[in-house]
Length: 173
Image 1 (cartoon, rainbow, N blue to C red):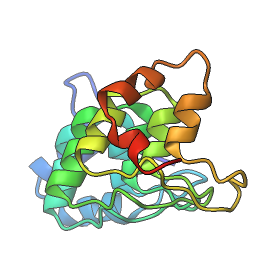
Image 2 (tube, one colour):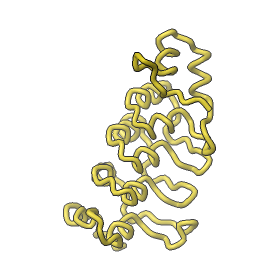
Image 3 (tube, rainbow, N blue to C red):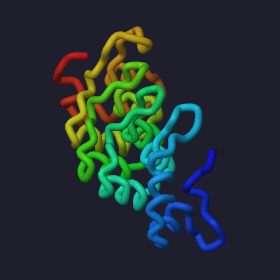
Image 4 (tube, rainbow, N blue to C red):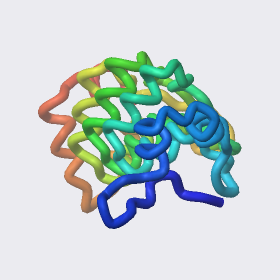
């Protein structure tokens, strides 16, 4: 598989060359291709690596921000779990990405941010209206919500977040 974000010596990617050269057929192939074993879209890859300009460009081209890969991750799941703050902002504010979307393991982007200790993302998702009590039974069979995960991790700074965001406790986990 090709990686459309590999840069040459001038810092340009195949996506940059396709855009600059107005090569619609190449650009369309890059956008419509699925990448890797998880069948990620170009937007998934851009979100995963934190390519802010590519994310914005793809959203402006009408790419579905809520598209799912083979394990039902949306680009927001990936950006939140890795900690790309600007990408999360763009996906939600400019692309209207769904925040309360469950993947194949019945986890939301908030679950990934909490699990991976991405405090800035946790705070941002709370501000954007994420539900810290989101939980569904499935492969995540214990039905753990993000607040359950944050409080149960003993060496976890997110417990301190609870005190700054009382809405994390208001609904009863």
